[in-house]
Amino acid sequence: MNGESAARDGKGFLGTRAGQALATNWAAFFLVLMLITFSLTGRNFLSIVNFQNVVHLQTVPLLLAIAETFVIITGGIDLSVGFVMGLASVGAAKLMQLFLASGLTPGLSIALSMLIVLAGSLVPGLVNGIVITKFKVPPFIATMGMFGIANGLALRISQGYPMIGLPDVLPKIGNSYLLYVRPGDFVSFFAKPENFPDNRVRELLRLIPLSLPFILIVIAALAFTLRRGRFGRHTYALGGSMDASIRSGIAVDAHLVKVYVLSSALAGLAGLFNIFQTGIGNYTTFNAQYEFFAVAAVVVGGASLAGGKGRIWSSVVGVLVLAFLENGLAISGVKPFYRYIAVGVLLVVAVVIDKLFPDMR
Amino acid sequence: MDYLLETRNITKRFGGLTAVDRVSIGLRAGEALAVLGDNGAGKSTLIKIISGVHKPDEGEIFIGGKPARIDSPMDALAAGIETIYQDLALAENLDVGANIFLGRERMKRSLGILKVLDDQAMREEAQKVLDRLDIHIPSLKKTIRTLSGGQRQAVAISRSIYWDAKVLIMDEPTAALGVAEQKKVLNLVRTLKDQGIGIIIISHQMYDVFEVADRLAVMRRGVLVGERIVKETNPDEVVGLIVGSETVGKER
Image (tube, rainbow over the protein chains, first blue to last red):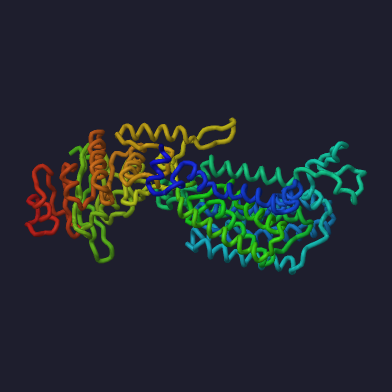
């Protein structure tokens, strides 16, 4: 009945309850549809190995998209996350090299470097936040400035080369799985069985990359903060109405600074993860465009660049949509230029849908 | 004189312009005072002084008979003076409860340690204050964006009342509303008066003034040119005061 009357209002199917649900969660439906399609068109698309690879490789983009979600909900944007990540990666690599050279054990070198880099990664966000709130520089410009600064510093530290000579244990931790199973034979945790030959490692069924529980914990904790915490409520309020927030006594400047600090801290965490994944310090090159991918994923997930709208889990869906689109088209043998076009079209469609349904939060 | 709020000889200058010139007005509990005047007459400046946005150059404000220092909007709020601006200052992406409690959220413990928002309690409290003011909003879970102009106004007013407003300043409360909604807001003003709240209304709508105000004060070029009891005057006389075609009020 409800649906019928809504349909008569001229909105048709989209006026109904089911239509609304579809419209506000279209990215999730699109993801499912895509997974089904590619399972039919691409050999080896539907496999545990492929899915685990995609998720593992998306850990860094997920961290950056989560960071971007908070910023975008306030109505801002953080273009510096990609290069802050690169700076954290080469910074940590440099520190590890120095600590190792001074005779510290690999374990201690890694732990100290991580602590210093995590603390240091608060600085770009602090600077962004202060420039935006105290000097009223639009976030787009302020963070683009930081984009350049972080890029320059990373280039200075790395001299433009991948930074090698780091402890071997890094990629072993970063790329290990929770379970190693040889069907019908044995199971081992965290690493392949001691005496199992390296060249036969592919016979093992490797389950749950360690990056998965790691990213799930980060996602769950920050989604909880955003939806259930006072910090999250104020983040939405700032994006909804700056005026209302100020008059409600929220310390809006301090809150914005915290949001940008959180963003660059997550970028720093992504940089550290990157070292564990690759075993080297990676200077981010221009064509990587991590920040643009993060913004695109958040928008595909349903957030609005005007602020006030967005969810962590939706951004996660956004990242997965873009990742599986790329992966599925590649496995199905589609040429790269079509893939770029597909991503571009999807991004614009996402914004059009956002304009049509402003009430999702 | 048992005024709830009183200004004495309030003066505010902007450079060479005297926006408000020695204005003294008083407001009693349960009374609605309309402040009228043409554009640039100084009504908004006067209101902004009372609500702490501007500091007066001269003059004093008394609350409950005692001199009050109102140096910021927060001071005004602490003194029980709430202002409903035309833009209402609501976060459209949040629900009614979240807006009423914005900046002063109710929290509860989850799993014994984590402090989380208690949206349930905030909605229940919101419902109580809406009931008290006889306001009906279909679902408190919906965002402000889905509400009508009158409903939004009601939410903004409810927020003030919930936080113990004694004086409510309303800036053009009916300006953006349809006829039916205007009636509802005016009814709401009567309800508020019955509950002992003092209301200052700034309005261009003569109808509103004669409908709900008890007294009116007319300003022209920063000066208070007349005060009238609504029952003892008529729209023609008031318009005359506003545009200055009559001799200045008898009491001055």
